[in-house]
Length: 416
Ligand SMILES: [Zn+2]
Image 1 (tube, helix red, strand yellow):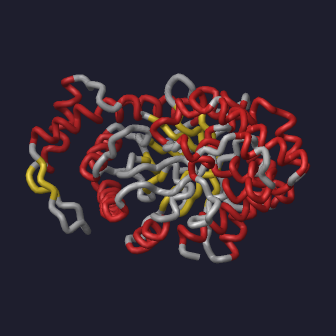
Image 2 (image 1 turned 180 degrees about the vertical axis):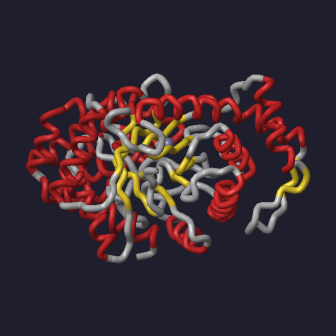
Image 3 (image 1 turned 90 degrees about the vertical axis):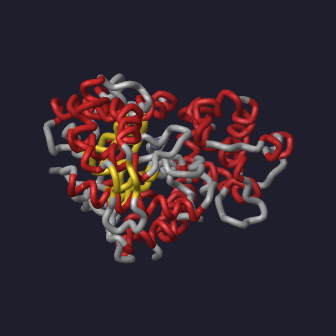
């Protein structure tokens, strides 16, 4: 079976130009003694906005691997797919993130709900998860409520999994199930029964992406109660450990953290807890590479800086259109967005330092950063002009991309 290694990092490359620069960060991790598997992920939405196809993402990944001599495993992830768009990814991907968030709360057939309750009624009463001090109490009514909320979503995951399996063959791809793009977090008990159902339905899930407590906004730090997150994350790790045994799921089952880039305030505790419990992790950091391209353009100055400024200006003017699809994963304070009349006067250094995520830096502006994060649609409209500027400034841009991944993300998370 194609197995995802213990530590893996999801990297996005919206414009498919930074594979080599990204791999540099993985080589550096290896030099520091950390084997980390790169996974290039791109969703259908990103492909549509940028006008690329899954074959392009596969080609860019293969070329970057070839050019750098990366000799370990790597994956190309069909990110957030559903039954309507999975087909075009099948030939090009070996990792599938089956997104069933939209199916949460939809009713499963009564017979299936009864079957689910029968399979799990041994947990009614005191539910003890090895390693968790707290004993959860579960009533039959609560179990039924969990079935009504999540069973249909797991059935949909199974349906999509079987569809992929039929075409690719069992064991030839990694399966992730995601439920993160919702408002309400799934608690550890719910996660336990979601895994029960996936196990019973024969979905060999290797990574699962729940919605965690707190806000996981795109490209900026975690917002929420860190102690609460710590407790939930640790319980989730132990739930996965137990679930993989009792529900016949893959041994390497691990958590996947979506919108995982820049969550600097919780990286050290995640790193500490996965070490404490000897668990793996998958972190998705998709959009952050595109922000580094913008920083690289700004630092390069001249026409490249002018291009970065026009992209911001257009994104500012079209902010409601650009933000709408991302409402659950961004929090922009409009008052803090500098008007383009002001940014037009900025130096490249000022633009870069306002955008670059250095916690505590006096110029760093998370609202500016999040707007640009969702503004890649504007860059896509510049098409070849944008691509040619990032390629003309390849050295500067690539350094921003590698340093961001390695210094600010990998080092902080794994405590290197
Ligand atoms: Zn997600």
